[in-house]
Image: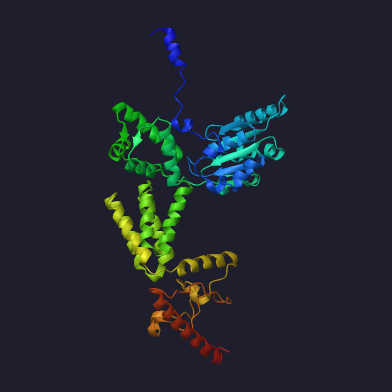
Length: 449
């Protein structure tokens, strides 16, 4: 190969990905996000106003955040400056400021839109660097994030930007994207079953859909295939998992849905969300721990067996692993969902913690103190303590166990479900006997006087 040929090959630009080639060039070409971009919707009105404003686009990957930012710059005839918070830093922010200042003071003054992808990756100092320039109107700030901006974006920056929530693309949106790719002539035909499988695999992510289509197109051309069917698609893609962010909002939203389905006594929904998490690659041991938490928080003493079953499920998974051990987790999820519910202990414990945190450090009454030595007994420790096992029904009616002078709070109130029905009945009886004994003790003359 000659040097000239080598130089020619070295300067050949890499091919532009299909997702980029099909990126919408106008607002009308955008697929999805009708709740923001449809007629009369907030972001559409912002486009039509001709007045740009700083905003944060919050949504999962592949739903159009970058596309919308580019279209905003185009609509407002603004210079588009992109920064990646994954790779960039303060130098990139300073460069963006300089470019904005140059554009504003040039012969043909132009506004600037600074787009920060994955803005949640910037630290506080980096995010703060935008504030004076957003405040002065030097540029319009548009941040894109897959994480909840309430937790990941500084409050000062958040207060200066409107948050728009983008949704995963619906099935109809993804089907429309497939049609657009087919119309381009760059991908092979797809059977109906293959299309459906591809839509499920994309999981609401347009970029994932188009990148996968491009992969299939390359493989199909290599094998001379004019049409992609479901069997060949699965063989080509392999056993890839669906998109799943194990540490992001999608993860915590899904575990929240599982927990609330169990709490809401819906075993089918509990199984659905459990399967979704396992299918997405969530650690089964984490799910086992969450099931144990559900047993103590939401079932509690209404059915104490629930905790034991959740613990057994966790141990069973440790012994069997996946996939066999997942059945034990499913069994625990169903049991917890159908079990009677009580958060009485959970509520009581929180109330007790709150009370203790706000109250002073009260002395332990003498009759409840430990008395292991003669000196402590001489000082009155343990004096007049009534040993419950020596009393009728092993209950010292009328005895007090709170600090002296403290009004007795009522933290634990059993619910009228499951075993707590009987617990509530027993507590009511014990409280009745306490009241009678204390009333009788108050009416007796003081024998120590």
